[in-house]
Image 1: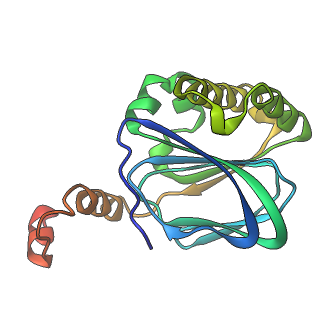
Image 2: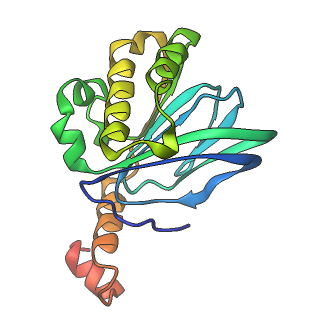
Length: 196
């Protein structure tokens, strides 16, 4: 398990090709939202907390903060991945349809969108004009919002699977530990903070 850097309210995009079989990365959690887009035709296994789900490509996965997760690709080959990390502020800034669609995303640990071929084509059309490693910050954010908008507009063309929440106490505890990791943390101080 690894704690990733807190990107806060900022927005970060990573693009890359990687060999599989393999994890992307090993089980980890972080204090920001993660969106993973895979367009290659390679089935994957998503692990979220204690749940496992086989995902048929192409797919788009949203993972909420403070949830232990990983994606595993069991077949041999290469895959292209688009990974977006974003904070609560971005969700609030663009919350209109997104918040309503996700039905209170904090109630979910992850949401999987298995894309139809028509949806995949729409997303490939959005990505086509851009060379991911050379995109500007504005282009990265624009492409992400266009993809989100497409998911909202054509969500009836997706198979949507929702992973439901783990204990809110665990989420708050993990959030507190991430925010105070540089301070001495003891069982007594955590018990005092969480009234146990």
